[in-house]
Amino acid sequence: MKKAYKHSILYFLLFSLLLLSSGLMLFEHKIGLNVNSVLDYYLGNQDKYTAAKSMDGVLKIVLPHIFAFGLFSMVILHFLLFTSSRNKAEIKIIVYLTFTSALLEIAAPFFIILGAGFFAYLKIGSFVLFESLIIYISWLLFKSIIHD
Image (cartoon, rainbow, N blue to C red):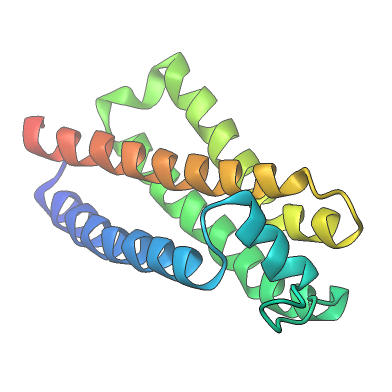
């Protein structure tokens, strides 16, 4: 891997870690990392004086995330093509899992609003899986920069 690629990827990884950290903090603060808090966020809670989210409200939140999740995933996964890991079967699984977890994380609120509360588990699980995959991909990239 050329030195310019290494520096570019390293800077991207640093910004990615900042993005992941702030995303985790916002998710935990705004929605919460347990099923009841996810349900309260989307369905409302009279005891806490929170209103239920509407389809329009969720759509306004989700629209920019569709682009951001897709673009971010594509860029970080594209960087794996510059590493020695690119031909491993593991990478194919990582690609599918990354895009699937992003899609499920974006789609879950709609199903929660439609009354399928068990999708709160999917919301949390897909969020954690997406964040974990991005951290793992970042580790693979960082390791390739160090060893290449």
